[in-house]
Image 1 (cartoon, rainbow, N blue to C red):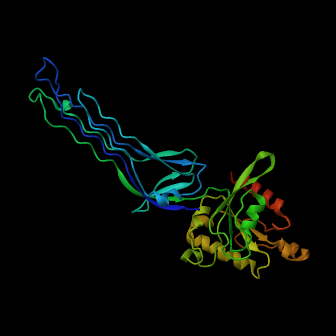
Image 2 (image 1 turned 90 degrees about the horizontal axis):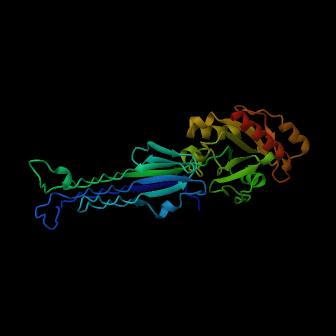
Length: 330
């Protein structure tokens, strides 16, 4: 199951208390203070791993608490530090404050690790408070509380190309054709209910990634259809590939609706490179397909590409064009 959003409560460990103890040795009836310091509370870290792909674990495990520090002991012995914990998340996870929704961290690289909650400092034992006028202090510090936070984990797929289109426009069929991804494919709207990520193998062992986003409909930014639930997954892409059904009665209108939905969700999406393609070319006569291949789409950043995933017509040309455009982006 693909889960890309989770609210989690995190608490670092409390520091151990300092000890109030005195030396008790033979022939030393009135030994001085010997209470050791408490150990530090455990820290909480979050680490990104490339082999994870969902936040599903956080549906069942919503609270994480690091170990407390041990109290100080006799003979000036320090208490043991609390054990740190590491929370693993997929690469591409961002962390926000649950109350303010302020962005705290962006784990956009494999093995990137951050401390999200610091453990409390251990209290000082009574040995630290001895003075010439108070040689037997009977008090010590208590350990400090560790940091406590409520955060949001939000996964945004990291891909080079994001596929944008209405439901049943052929996105899933295309990604299954050009990569090893195997999304569910059927001839009805909203077959794809979660994003799919595919790796396209190119020439000379090169590759790039493509994200298939569930279909957008007019009014998606207002919550219609699947709403904006998955639009976050194309925020990181460098290229947007719009798929428009070649049999549509108004290609320009279809593109404009899709473009406006993205723009309404995030003005930054509208600034990305926009490539328009007509899918399902096998459904029209060859002469008509040739005419449409020359059609200009307003607000697109390239000439229109035409392809058919079913017959592979124009698919290699599409891959070549995407690769060349990605190299220009770099």
